Image: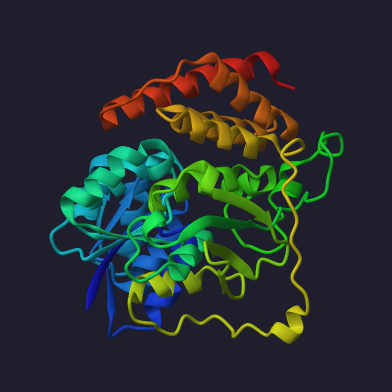
Length: 392
């Protein structure tokens, strides 16, 4: 029986994880659930899954959650704050941590789980984008098991040799990272001038939160996944190619020196990679329907348009620059996306904010999480100041 802490339980990954867990009560039990603003949903999850602990951001949220749970007769203990997140991620009773908090907020609790040697199901790509070197060194030092949840990275993991350690030793020549292209695939930069948040969040294939949906629309999500792939699989940005595949059936591919290309296929449902990582190296039922290739009928591929979707080019540039450039990229993007969702800047200004921040700040080499957080805050301040000058 695996005891699981789910960081980010109320998001789409969290809900999918709980769905898979509920299908296998003989294998998994919930130790802790965490959430942010969706207190009612978190309360319902605690009641259904019998969590020992629940963690929210602040005291007001904790008071509200305690009231809801008390009225329902639930004995889940409620905690709040960043320290509590780290506490439930690193608790001795915990075997597995699903790291599904969106954005930079997920870094510290995910690192707490890593340093205590937990099995990490990594859906928080920002942990590797911001602090890749520190994170991977901590994984090695603690003996933590790191399994990717993003469908693209999970697909690559499934296509690698069982004894994979280094690409050059395994005959790998290239990783092919698939991208749906988002809701504006084929649009020119001019056509994207008047896009609304509602349009940007209407992804054609995947059900995701608003921030990740916007990242998918700008292709920044693919840029962040590129950086994550470099750390997960020990490859350079030059060894990763983004392939736009609008059907989202092939989730990624691995190309080998002998001409072989291995791909992982499946319906676009996050329960597949979640079930794979939960049970690895075994396989369990996920609740996902079998892929019907006759219904799919065709698979299309095209190169990404990096001129119209500048965020992807900026991510490649940040990956090549190294140091804290990816952390700056991520922070600037988070600030810009929120400003877009709040109606303060236009969709086309998101890459403009990120570009200005990257070019306006010097690149350094943080040697601690504190240094990474300083770079993150510096970039947020710069981006916010720039946005205040260009607001609609």
